[in-house]
Length: 114
Length: 113
Image: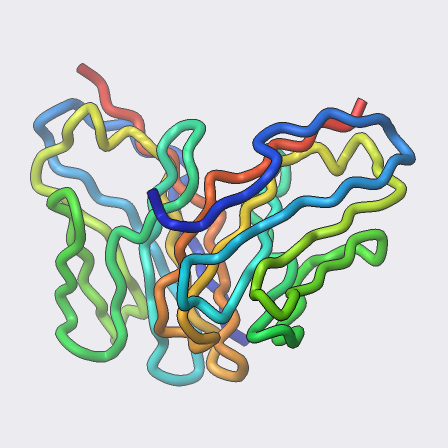
């Protein structure tokens, strides 16, 4: 158990809908990262927050957005969903945002868009 | 620009034989390098990391990796494979500018009985 929690574990929804994925980092970690893992694209970094502020952006679509709240939990919002958004979404946390620091991963949320 | 290349998408070895998963990186400065493992239907876990200390890094479950600057490589090895090592392995390099991590495409390790 990494100490990072993600809810829900599974989500099934229809095209065009909007969903919110939630992540609680390990106690004491200030940085949160979101990743998307699909069969055809592999593991893709989406976005990183540090202490409530956006720090880095990866391959995140404009239909997707995220935020980190004062209690350090984070939410990833996916809207106008398409079939291709079906994937495993991971959240990770680390103490700070530096590159030498280990990221601890949550179990993931499996999103299925029908 | 920084990048990381895992040279094999799949590696198949027999149980009890050595494992070699290859990773080459491109980085302007001394990078931080990591290997993460993902077991089937599980999240990712850090195996080991290199952050400019000893060039031979020991990780969990008997894995180790050697940082070779002249070859820009960070290959992962294990002397004797176990069935429980079957998983996907990711090589990761830290970006110099903003410490963003660049992930390799992954190598699936298959262990034959």
